[in-house]
Length: 398
Image (cartoon, rainbow, N blue to C red; front, side, top):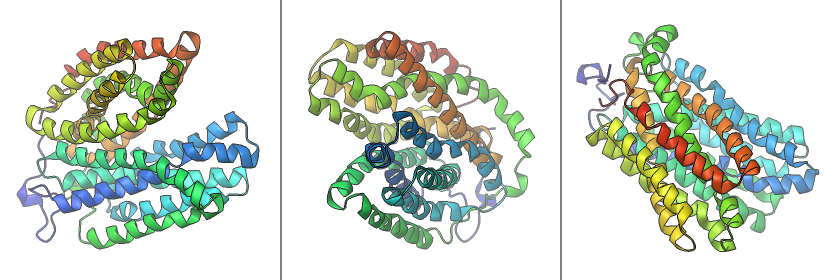
């Protein structure tokens, strides 16, 4: 089942699923994703402030990340509702809600208040990531991969800008002044309200949406290979995005390059997300997945073999390669059960959260037991082992 809705199912006024790529609206939703993820990216840079101000242990500080991310497990349920009802306003108000909660963290008086604000921000984030990519996909017409590329670019830019914004705000405004940062999120929600007010949030084929049991049965042929691919990819992406600065520091890399490495990687990932999604519309989902998952571990081995400023070149290539897969998988998942796009997208996002969290721990254990260099090498090997799973994907090129 790879086809998407044809012209006769589209609304006469503003199509719920456009024949052509609606650049303006797709860019609007992607920009909202970027603004939203800028705020969720505040947390790592705020942890030292919380540790100092509230006398937190590293363990209690680390648990704050769980409060923010755990609501991701709600995404399949939100997605199931989104296949039946119009949840457009979840996308519209998510930047405002998340911005408010994350901006208030600087003045939270107690640990319980931090946890409460982060849980609310996490629920808002889960809502946006359940409905937003599906709405963007419906506005992308037959260029679903390109639309998912735009969506991922927004997220990558947000995660790149977030630490810079909050660190600058802490210096200029102090923690007590961080509530002012919520203004950008409030403005974005107002802009979304104007731009998306006539976009159908309810799927054009909502009456034909499958019951969740039937949708899960339809997803089953994809689910097995997908879980394996997500695990294999998570080893590479988690090693790079979580442990890269620490690895480079351990290897004796200068402080500037080690600190800038993640920004270099994620900046290149912006290009990778857009190029990967667009190419998959023309070359096929499986072909782009195979190329990326072959190239990334090979580049990782080269990265481990070089030193100094050659790392910059490899980081650029790794960013393009490793982060180009996200929009391709999202497009593939949505195409697998077109009647229940939001449900299956939510299942994929929740699976990614759970599996990636486990993988991060495994990489850390390997790093402590052997070394981060060994952990990076193991990650590359696991990615190569996952390559044959791409051939098991059912009718991915639609």
